[in-house]
Image 1 (spheres, one colour):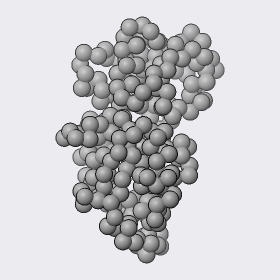
Image 2 (image 1 turned 45 degrees about the vertical axis):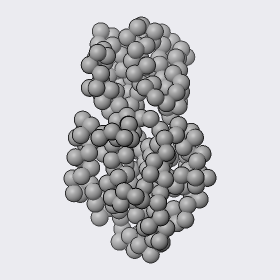
Image 3 (image 1 turned 180 degrees about the horizontal axis):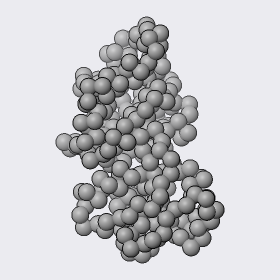
Image 4 (image 1 turned 180 degrees about the vertical axis):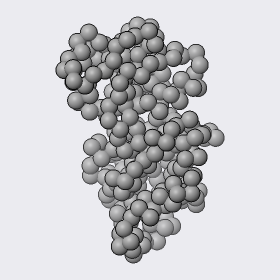
Length: 253
């Protein structure tokens, strides 16, 4: 078990009827393959992880909200948790000691481009980069790109970026690698893309409201159940369903 025994004992002692019985509502934005069509047979990696952690299906429900609104609602405990958030974005939320998945932002170009992102190069004034407004991108990753095209909205933004690239409106785009791979798999008419350099891997969490009853207990219980699912092979099976590699697995915070 990844948690120290005394932490597990504390988690067990903190678990209240709320933690084990009351329904939990989670906020989720649109971010396939991590959060997809909730009514489909492939609702998304994070959604399937959530359902596996809480097999009592009447215990959890999901509200579809933009990321920024979802954070606000979770802070206020109008939703008890949120899917797919990093600590830098909302450090006041309560994060489990185990990330749900690992993501990585990369630059993508059309196949005939020979440009490659080099972090040692300070400026890229000749490159027009496309990115999603709501995407949390480390400033160091993009500060050398004075020319940017920003796509607004929460739905199909990655597809819109790929289409801009295809039409020559941008030279490169920034998106999460698993997301791009999945989109291209589902949309064969879109152009194949070339990965042109990536940023650091980062853990993405299913986090809890600090205003919930016993949020630390909720987070520890979630992490223990998630670790058990990993040992059983269930998490790998979920990732395989979406064509995600083992590097997408989360890790200890």
